[in-house]
Image 1 (tube, rainbow, N blue to C red):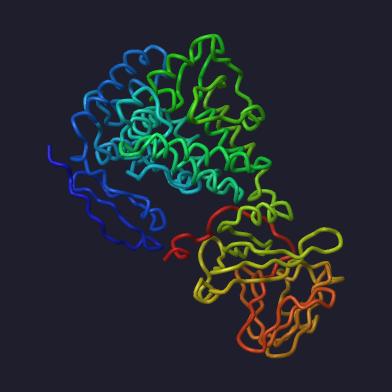
Image 2: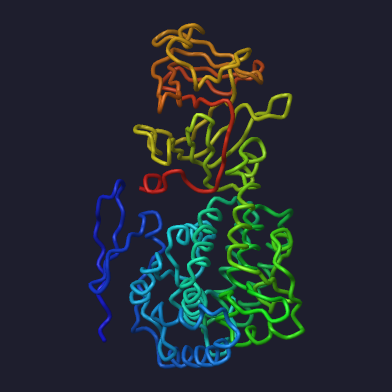
Length: 493
């Protein structure tokens, strides 16, 4: 059968999206900011050896797993268009997944965790196109089509589990990692690729492993991204289901590994009752078989756990701790004012008041402002190409937050358009300049724009310009902070 032609067209759906449309399947929307990670499967590249590897793993696994895997596994293979006899065409899998509210796309190996979760949050299963080498037929740490297709896809036919994975993606995409963890990810990606590269020497593989070990040793503390990665590992990747004494397999890492699927049911592997606290405090090593696994009673238990985890994350708690997580990430993040204004960029520095609360912050590099996840007109990266800075807090001695001021409140406090205004905020911040514009959304003030603006903190100048416009964000506090962009489609346009 000839592979369907993949066509790329553009459509207008509120924002511009990229539509991947094969001639044999319905339209499937891939957001613009995720499209660069999508590659063509190029089915003809698979050799007969590749097909033999697929058949060997799938037949052996199926014969064993049909009796010990979650009931959705056997039926899920058929429902997701996976054959035991040949590598699947992901376009056909995409068709088969759609009745369950999911789809599939092909990607090139490892992608950043935030991107991976972003795909899953939209009900899109990213599938690596490569397949393991014969010498790694039992298990490989590198993403491959056996793991992604035959491991992840079948259990998605269970509605409760599919809802868990999608909700996990929505929450996981917002988790902050640290700079050091970003470096570990790159080291893991390099090491895994070399392991599956037939041209790589043993010396190159060993050097990559040493670099990975060094990067892992440099990590101090456990970020929320690492905690949620552990929860994902011990459930979606290596989860067991049912009774502690006789559990069933549902984790993709188990369903795609000849060796570990059998090993995990022996007494050599400790079986523990699933617990959110235990999973997020248990580290894992992708290069070894797991010494212990967690058994959940139901997929509802998993869904409840990820909702409980959400409440401890920066995007839910906000405040100083959330902003400090954003600063330590060293990556693109979004801070959200209590007014609803969203500021997306890379946090560079912060100013603290005597009570240790943050009263001013600075973003470096291109920054964008948004509201309700849509970029504000005239406030994209081109406008704020060199960064963005702004105070946080109420006016000193005023109980009503500035974002809730009516026109009458502004007049009562001497804040008038086209006049020189001086604002003194709690925490020692002073802002003064000629007020040129007030930006509101749903009755709340988001921005005050000044000409010839000066900002100081207890007499120390933080910002001063005699030219151009300074846009001051308005909000008494930071209610949320999360990894990634408020409006990724416009941010990466």
